[in-house]
Length: 255
Image 1: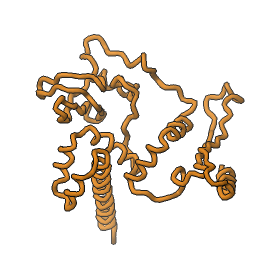
Image 2: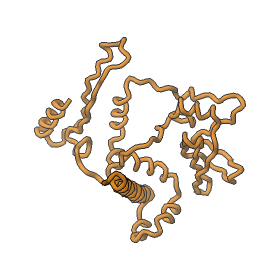
Image 3: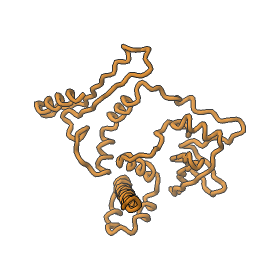
Image 4: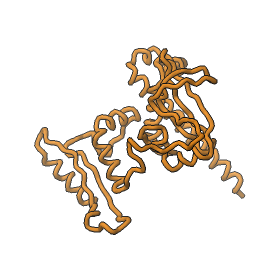
């Protein structure tokens, strides 16, 4: 695969102006081994004549997010290549069943009244904490106010979630997972904070020295700027904690 990439780089240097293409090179040959359960495979992507796609350049988190959205259809192809030939566990018309006697499962995009919390609104996002056996919901009320609610899960529902995490909430969605990739973490923050009212974001950022500049940003730019700062702060704090833990460990094991 490295040879293919070098060839593409040489070809790119001879391209005429205005010529560009998305290129995907794979070694998949499943049709030649239909009886095998697993075949190792690899794939590369390359933006031929495209300066900001699949090139080793450094970007800020929000610029990397914008570039990914610009080429999002190609990202879907990459995702398919990494999972092929795995078949989805469920399709749109066949979501995980509810056990008789269990309460109806919350579905993203539906309106609910949460009496105990005094909230009526549409569920815009949902997340399960397996360790806590709890569901966390983001609910958007009619006045635009967003609330985060939680409820416990039964053992049965937790087992269903473990089997079908992508479709548990009535829509096919990517399951949040622990990651050390800064962009994946940033994308998750953006997904969450895009449901927040603008006023809430500005209120959380009121201590920023450039708050006047933040107030002039449009809604999307405000979310991206806020999430980039939040992501950088969290990652920097984690790095400091790891460094401090390492120092403490060296003290304990020292002479």
